[in-house]
Length: 440
Image (cartoon, rainbow, N blue to C red; front, side, top):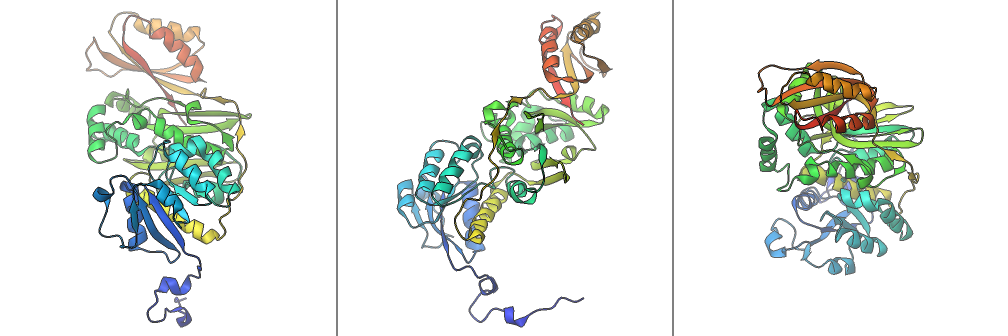
């Protein structure tokens, strides 16, 4: 059937089509606090594609004269003083300064004044999300943070609304675009870690100090938020074990390929018998897995439910524009909600937490070759009741710095770590053993 057009919906002269069909009566006045990459992108969206019920009225940022832009309307007031924003008639504050200090204090004050807050601040929500949501509830306003995990990918709203009818037991994914870009470049281009990191920094994917990304701290803050929402479990970021991607080299991708796998930084959490297992670490994932197909700076989150099975969210998780889209989407959600009332969700529960997943393991040893060394390693593994699955060794490496790989049958990570403490004390090892789980 051909599409029809109702002329009664056509805009009258002098009115936009959106204004003609959008019955929002209340205009929300928006103040942006923090005018970096994301703040600038949010302002552009609000000015280039204005929503009839959202009006940008203020920008609060350091170095106002340096950051001031000519493309915003003259009615937008600029200040470097947050108290001026609090005293204004802004209904909604968009917090984009990041970090915990002074962001936490400022958001608390804004909510206590009855001003709703939209934020992309993962550390803030990971550490203080429940507390801030309660302040919002008490003062009849809202706290929205859809941009805090996976940027422009609607994971937060998907978990809160789209999967609310399911009983989720597992959440996993690739939550840091910087790490994924670096690992993708090592895999595809044969680059060293340092060269791949420099490329990521040049493209703006990595900060000058990349520690939060490559050590896993960024991803574990995001995982803490997802665990709270999806698995209804209260956890702080520092309760999640994380391992860096810095020991991963091209040789590991070569061995992984032989095992039908690639390597990704994987964030995962699972409820088992009322215990939460959670970690952020590099891992081998089969080529058949959705995780393996995530390239460059993309993000992916998989939620597993009792009734709905596996649901995958994927897209651009980093960068000013994708994150700004999530921020503006939260602003529009505020408008659609009408009354500024924080919705009630299941309260997260404290649960015992562990990183002692049971899986197959990939062990890469770098050794000074000598007779009998494999027998010594096998003896230690046997002592801990660990079964060897396979031994892999590619030719062409120096005998004084020789890498080879042992894969293990399924066993708890804690058992492997105890065995590796003994193995790493053997005098033929050139560097500590790399221990990665093999997922799937």
